[in-house]
Amino acid sequence: MKILAIDTSCDETSVAIADGRRVLSNIIYSQVLLHKKWGGVVPSIAKRAHEERIDFVVEEALRKSKIQNPKSRIDYIAVTQGPGLAMALEVGINKAKELAKKYQKKLIAVNHLEGHIYSAFVENSKGNPKRDFKFPYLALIISGGHTEFVIFKNHLDYKIVGSTLDDAAGEALDKAAKLLGLGYPGGPVLERLAYEVGNVDNHNFPRPMLKSKDLNFSFSGLKTSFYYFLKGQDGKNAKTPLSGVKFLASSFQEAVFDTLTKKTEMAIKQTGINRLIIGGGVIANKRLRNLMRALVKKYKGEVLFPSYKYLSGDNAAMIGVVAGLKAERGLFVTNADKLDRIPRMSIEVTTYNSKI
Ligand code: KG4
Ligand code: ZN
Image (cartoon, rainbow, N blue to C red; front, side):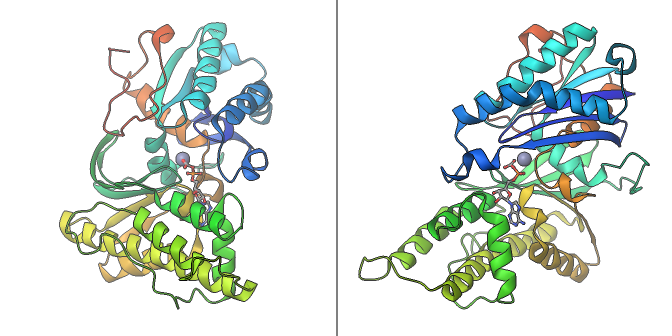
């Protein structure tokens, strides 16, 4: 069963062709360079860039998967419905509707966060890696927009048990990098600088929410304390030499990762689940992967990360794989014309029911 999937939830225009869990092609056209100078994603720029490139990305995905006649070779069209930037989501949804009409196919709506969870089970075109599902899992989504614990009980069955009350972990990293003048996105550059000084922590910035017993996060206090630290006690900007920037980057990253790791330990204890799935852009980070590996070892569990590097960030392959599971269960959009974006969509919302 072949699915053409589209994701335009943020600043990547992505289209993939999936066949069950196998990905035949996945094209990602990143807009990072367009947004870089603004220090974050600008919705109107994202919308225009998606519109300009989406047709090319669709064509590339078909070409790479060697599909010449989509009408006979593609079974369904899938698209991310939310969460994400409203203006950006809209471009993908409109294109999905157009293709569904053109090729006379049913539409499948997918939650972007489901995609990040399933990215641990996405296979390459040869069907690797082969991973069996061993439910239940404790899933942690860590991206630029979300920091969420989800109990992944069974296929397409999720329960949120913790989330951020303000900024997401990736957002905190991005803001810290911006304050240090390191550009956007911040995660990768902080990782590199932190690695150069051995991931030390010599500033001991606050670890928010570790005293609370729930599984929620809050990163805005950490960001504020970092801001005031940089401003210096006399209110002037601290003139930090590059070596100092590296230590600051490393210490900030450690504060975020220490919080994530300790909360995850609490989540393992509270849920009794020691099999983890971690998805979302931030889990591209090697330091965080090592911390999480060490944690699950302590609890004799296991942790699954996205099966290939490109699957950590936003991509349509993960959307296509989720759509395949929905298609097997007959979970199609019943009125394609009425399909609308849901920018703040929760993973617990079942989008595929007959109301759509
Ligand atoms: O999942 P994603 O690509 O987009 C959203 O759905 O938000 O996540 C983007 C986030 C950004 O905050 C970015 O700084 C962060 O993931 N990120 C990283 C790394 N690569 C991307 N954070 C830490 N280390 C990285 N290597
Ligand atoms: Zn994402």
